[in-house]
Length: 96
Image (cartoon, rainbow, N blue to C red; front, side, top):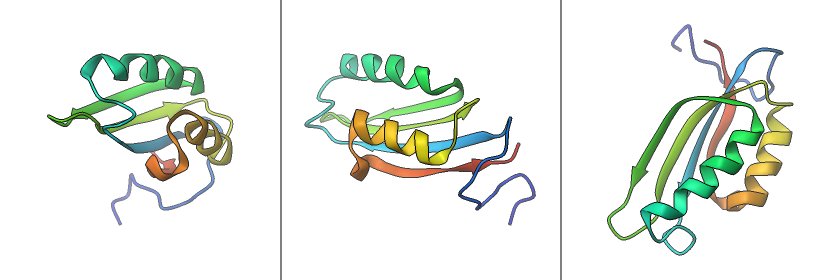
């Protein structure tokens, strides 16, 4: 395993969480539909390294690091309420 990556599913104070979402075309049909989501996700904590890949027919992937979140379970719960639990590809501790 790479020394800067973690497979742990709990986070330590000050540690980042790595999040990857797969967003369905029905929920996110156009480019502009992603911006309200990013604004709501920013409430989880300080975001960094945001990557957005848009599919031509809508939907896509959104990945980011979040710092200062309350914990993985809390972030997963909030993400599930925003995009649905099935859209969460990855949400784990990321040791930087």
